[in-house]
Image (cartoon, rainbow, N blue to C red; front, side, top):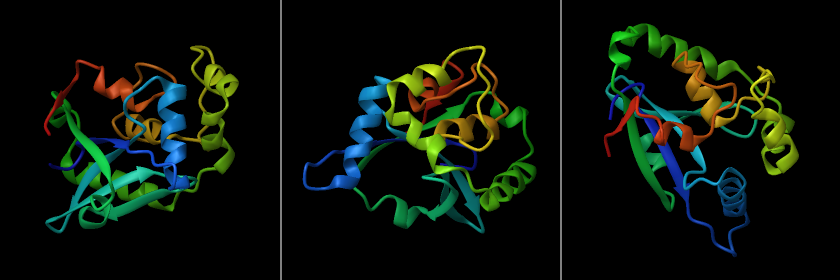
Amino acid sequence: MRTWDLILQHTKSYWYKPNTWSCWIIRKVTSSYWNHSGEILELDNEIYVIESLWGWIALTPRSEYIKYDIEYKILRMKWFENKFDLSAYKIKALMQLDKRYDYLGILKLFLLICFWYRTQPNKQVSQKSWWCSEFNARMKDLSWRQSYLPKDFDENNDFETII
């Protein structure tokens, strides 16, 4: 794994763990195997995951990130190294940590009508309600759609599976 690789997550759902129910709902609403995405960020020879969570951008050490009962898939853009300077990309990623996004923007995911509304091509995505994959897409300056889901990266030929 290296900086700017994408990490897709499939969190197993358990009836006795209410925190996992939202992951199941996300997969059902989005018709996807994956319920979350983040990016790998290497700092001082340590691996971190930077991701958009419920209202903020978080930086988590890999050792903390992988301890949960989650299936992962690492994707890499085939041409990405030619587009960005590694040092500049790390700075761009770290500058996102002070951003706070509104909870309602992310909670809209659970309402099918809002999901439909957000995916319409003529609708603009709010800068205050980035979902996890919208954060990843904007970090990479992607513009192939207005709204992003984890499965969009998995199904896109510009990405290859690393792990």
